Length: 117
Image (tube, rainbow, N blue to C red; front, side, top):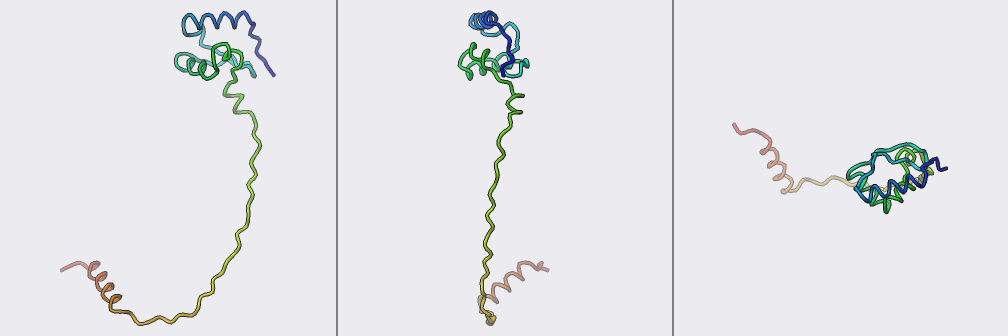
């Protein structure tokens, strides 16, 4: 659905003006879908021209940001796979008496936590 009514003569004039002066006489570009006017000048205009492939292509194919936002995309449906519950059997283990290394480590930790007087 093209709402742009810009005549070919106007596009020719704007193309020649841009090629001569490096900018447009007015900083307005019309969206080809909605007909909405968008402002573009300076480096913004030059980047748009480079991205479009030329000033003529920009003037005849420009689609504004508002149209791009309103285009609806297909929602992505996530597939959820349930996790299998796993249980581990633990044998009853009796605690063994602490080793000398365990006693030394515990004593060191207690000594490092209590303040020296």
